[in-house]
Image 1 (cartoon, rainbow, N blue to C red):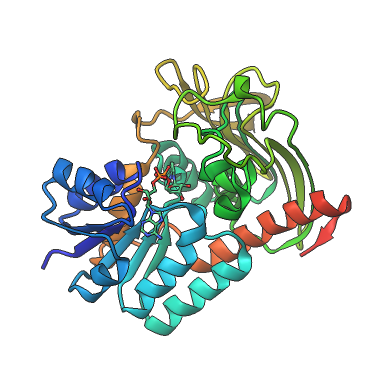
Image 2 (cartoon, rainbow, N blue to C red):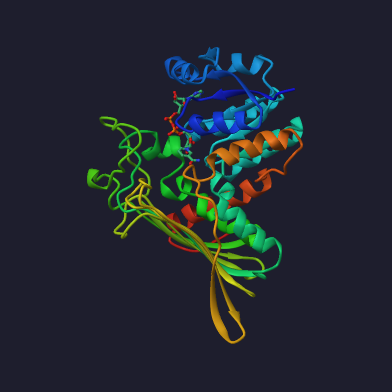
Length: 358
Ligand SMILES: NC(=O)c1ccc[n+]([C@@H]2O[C@H](COP(=O)([O-])OP(=O)(O)OC[C@H]3O[C@@H](n4cnc5c(N)ncnc54)[C@H](O)[C@@H]3O)[C@@H](O)[C@H]2O)c1
């Protein structure tokens, strides 16, 4: 029987969740949004018959699973409510506003014995999966150090809307563009973090010249109280290290989304260089391994299929195929707790002006 899915929050990612779920045979039966007009717009586009303005009504229905596409503040309460109603949950990133919320979500999933997965779509990219195959087969050895970057020059998503409002978003690019931190940790085997050192900058957060070319319209008298850029360094208990740079607005050449790593047998890189901030018509994707062979330095280019959705369809499909017992989940609640602890620690270190022990 087809898995019945309800969408909570008719956000932009519905355009990926819905076709991704359908590709694995799931049926999208309803959409709930506090703004029912938004739910109706998406429902009409995909031929979904039922909409709700109250999430509780969707949860009373016979849907098997929900996907959560709301501003970040609502991820934890909605996921917990859905898990308590015995629904499997696929939730947009970031998992929650902080590690404490994420731990409560993980506990609710364990208690309900239901699936809780997040849309870390960058793990589902062909480049990431190709690289992971080399890592799993031992070609890279142990990854000792990695660098995770998602850096933009003029990429603030909207002005004064929920993205730039800490109460609703949890923060700026550290928590919003957390994908490469997650991907580096995935490649490294999600080691136990021990120390974090972070610094954040808000220099350009109120400067409209640094706004991205997409995103939500400006909100007059809205709030802009998150960081515009962050730099951090994490040391793990077994000696591995991770350097991170995340920015919406910083004097960078172009938008870069990358993980580079140095292993005991090979180094490597998965990277997308965008043409302009947020526009990928001239983007360049790389998936490379660096080895020493027979006394020479050898660079291997791994050829992968192009995926303009950056793994978003494949990530949604993985949720359904996991529910159907055909795949393993691409991410777990335990990993999400570690990730949120690292993000909390980067913010705490920036606030305290000192390294923070995790
Ligand atoms: N994985 C990715 O590549 C990616 C890209 C963009 C956004 N996102 C994530 O998707 C989520 C949504 O972002 P967006 O830009 O689509 O937001 P959005 O503001 O465009 O849409 C969110 C929708 O949620 C509704 N909503 C708000 N509170 C609700 C509640 N309590 N219950 C039900 N509906 C509610 C709003 O009315 C709105 O229609 C965010 O967590 C964001 O980080 C992920």
